[in-house]
Amino acid sequence: MTTRDADPAAAAGRPALGEPILEVKGLKVHFPITKGFLRRTVGYVKAVDDVSLKVHEGETLAVVGESGCGKTTLGRAILRVYDAASGQILYHRRDRTTVDLAGLNNQALKPYRREIRMIFQDPHASLNPRLPVLEIVGEPLKVNGILEGKALEARVCELLEKVGLRPEYLRRYPHAFSGGERQRLGIARALSLNPRLVIADEAVSALDVSVQAQPINLLQDLQEDFELTYVFVAHDLSVVEHMADRVAVMYVGKIVEIADTERLFATPLHPYTEALLSAVPKPDPRLRGSRARIRLGGEIADPAQPPSGCYFHPRCRYAQDRCASETPRLREAAPGREVACHFAEELELEGVRRAGADTTLTTN
Image (cartoon, rainbow, N blue to C red; front, side):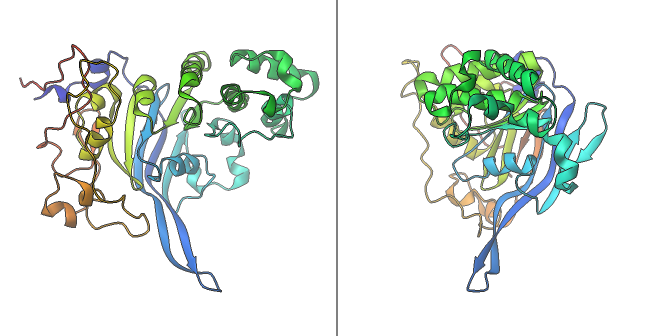
């Protein structure tokens, strides 16, 4: 038995995961490709292709991958912004009953949209420039008939203070705020209905690196105060390492690896994860030059015409004949670790090294 078989929560120094709040099973989101005057459907873009994962109550699950891998589409499908072609989105309510969000119409979805909210990527585009802060943050409360008048104004002031903004900003418009302040407004709006699950779609990627730490720390503080669960969509692995409890790695619409953050960074099991980690900046000068960055050849697979077998095999330096003909299923390779690779147990992949840290696998 190797150290990678140990309990993931204990290895990371965190308590065991809570009960699932969300389970995605076999989710597919396909967008039609149309052609000709009659706009006939000639194919489909498989943006999300048979994704299964669990989100546990109180955790932060990061979804990472290259641009176009389907991570944002997955987040929006959970919210039912996009309809699923097939699969289940099982939401576990506070009373421990379960509902499949994928099968509900808009009217039936309304109460669950109060409990599952989203922080959008671009704080400039996601805020209506014609509305003041009071209406932007208070709109979900008005639409759902919860508060109005002075009570609504008091609630918005409370939310502004929670995200580090002054109540005097109620009458200001979005153009009067910096990028970081606009993102705080987006966070306040997402929290207005006291949600249980928040999907943060690239919540800091549109911000300057010098101010990214502020909303990241704010999200962590709010998670504790509001007892939130996060699905954190991102491509910056340095932010993910700081923010997430677990990481799901996506490639061309599929999940290729899920693991505890600390162990995934130290000992990845999938070659695509290894390549992503090789691009993580190393601030410690003692580690610079310790390994070469893995530069993947070829192009990302076309989700409208993906290759046979493993979607990653045309770019994988470890690929064998089996990879081109047989699609690997996402399976448990060790307790708390899932991977979609035929040869995960045979490969010795390198993760991110830390000064003074020994990531060597040992055997009992």
